[in-house]
Image (tube, rainbow, N blue to C red; front, side, top):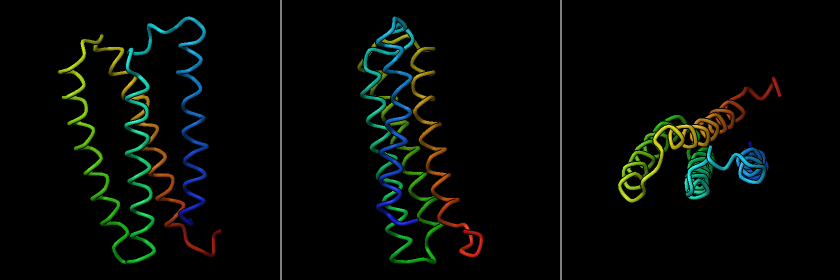
Length: 128
């Protein structure tokens, strides 16, 4: 997968996963979202964008290092998310169940996107 294709797909994907929270806040279920939901959303989406771009750039420059780049960037993403959660919870008083739901909604969908890009990139060229 080329970098520009992945970036366009990422923009489309981010827009799609932003629709349900926007609809919930607009149509009366705002109590299901933390007040700083969009901060969480854009932080994790930006982090995912950096991870996807970095692994695709590494794949073009060093094809043999692709899996190591994927594992390393995923480890950095997990650590950045843990630091973000600790700082976010220290600064804000939120309902822990709502925060967990909001955080894992964005985190797992972005992780699924990363795995999809990985699978699309590693697919054998004959099968395409």
